[in-house]
Length: 368
Length: 120
Image 1 (cartoon, each protein chain N blue to C red):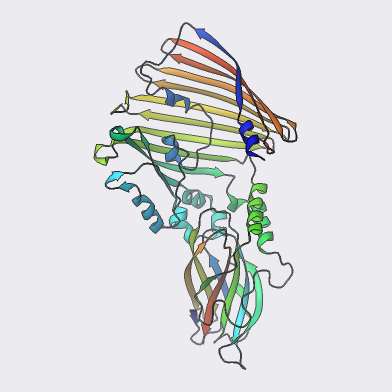
Image 2: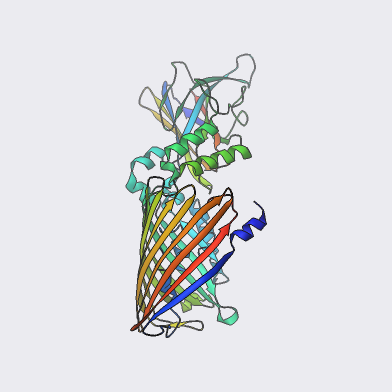
């Protein structure tokens, strides 16, 4: 599809907004921490790199070291001339570092505890705020433990059988795999123990990828818990580290048939008192719950979102949201989206409700 | 080449282990020295299997031969991973011979050959 279509696809127009006030306006008194509560209302299963989520820096591309040596090299990148370097995310799992090295597929499949433990991840991420002399590097360390993961390809027999069909095109009783040389073992008369065989063609790689996309359900059941800790380092100086937040997450996604998905998450954060060149905020506690129901048909994608959260601080506040979005296919490559939403804000003794309606259209050939 | 030293024992069966919790299939070949041409080998196909299944060897002398597994690893991981590849041989007198080597699995290179020389 052309770039013009993609540009059109993201065009959106706000056609109506109404505001209902309950006893006056409700603006934030310090304005410094109030935006964080909104992030606690959205439903999602805990993401791949929890430390990046803690910093609201999910765009960071994480490094996933496949050995202890690679992990040490990745973590050394955090040191920039004695200061903490921003813009780095590293995810470490016992599976990729050492446990998985000799684990067989049968062991992985048959022992859920070993499987979940080996895929627990410790993530580290850094990001920066401000610029020049006022730069503050933020860092986070987080631990995520999967309880269930329906997207795990190692448990997906259909995807594996499909890939076997690509890798082993020969059928029957004879050899199915690439044959070694006829007159000597591969790689000469005195070969190393392991020698790489032929590489896959572009077509074969595409077919392997398709095996996965065709056989992983969009609404696969998943659940995970996580804890994390974030810090602030003015100028990237580790000796000036101050605690920022400590947080706990629980998220789950449950699929039903090929049409429905229910996602729910709970998030708690304690924000420590912060006072540096960029930010001043009192200590507070935030608790939020988010729920999303998704219905997906060939011609319709319906999302219904609800969320409720509370912040306990000098000026406590409550936020709620309810929204629904329908994406309807009206032509071969033409989708129309219609959305409605209500936001509830209560700060101190006053509350307000915002409502909105939004529509957009997409020329993308794929379902939104 | 990695080596199984029989020390007079008779090999019964062999096994191939690939770490990383990857599903894999294999074909097993036997290379015997060509009596006609020095430093040349004659390849024969012994059989195939999946995963860590033990393969029972035919009753013939394997001293001076080489065994080669042709292996296909099913892998959807986007990141390469270094794993252990282990070849085991069980012999008549209870002797278990083992050889291990690291190998980096990547989605682009799912095929590998594993070679072990058998000496009497």
